[in-house]
Image (cartoon, rainbow, N blue to C red):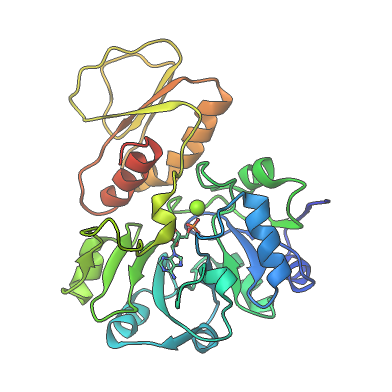
Length: 315
Ligand code: AMP
Ligand code: MG
């Protein structure tokens, strides 16, 4: 399959509207889109990524009017979050309506919905003839793609097009809040922080699994994610470590040891933005072990911790 690279949102949308699977930039990570009204494109999307069919896709919209095309019921907590954080890096899980096929929601009666803030994403979505189902535009299990070059590396020849934009400004996947039940629940940490959510919804709960036998609230969370080929070792700022050859480091504190490759980030925002591209850079350089500083569980540190713990396979 020929993968068209384009800088034109209209051309990318035309490819999607004619049944294609197209990657596009967003402020979180690049997304891999297919029209929700095109079952064959949805099937190809799962196939291109190697994504298990029981891992639902997030539906992307460009305007609040489009919410009615995907969600059946918008309860008061969802309204508060929409008012405060849409458009932006927040996905809401809502009761789906009958226009959203079960192939998108992996059989669930709920749908994840996001309205990205990235202007090129919105221009692209505005030219698409239906809402767009889009997981992250990377091969399943690998670190998410935060640049079009990375998307192309993973998916060249497997998808119909890539809309080339700037590198993702956040670099971590969206915050997900389940608003389909009586109580809002934080399912995945992201750039919209727990503290920001609590400021408008003090009753928001954390997704603590109390019953292992119950179906997972966010099915995708059970799969290995974000992992580079190198193994990860999670460290704290003052840990003394003995490093071997071909080791790398990423964090916000300077380590006392000499690494062959190191990224010291001036703040947590930069750490989040650089994390996945650093993982991929380390793999390209033949690094065996990446030491990653575990930030505290506050602000965007919660999302970075979550990705590090999942990527290291230690959750
Ligand atoms: P990705 O697009 O690769 O970041 O993955 C999307 C994530 O959103 C998956 O991990 C899903 O578990 C979660 N998600 C999408 N739709 C739903 C839904 N209806 N209910 C719960 N979680 C969802
Ligand atoms: Mg993903």
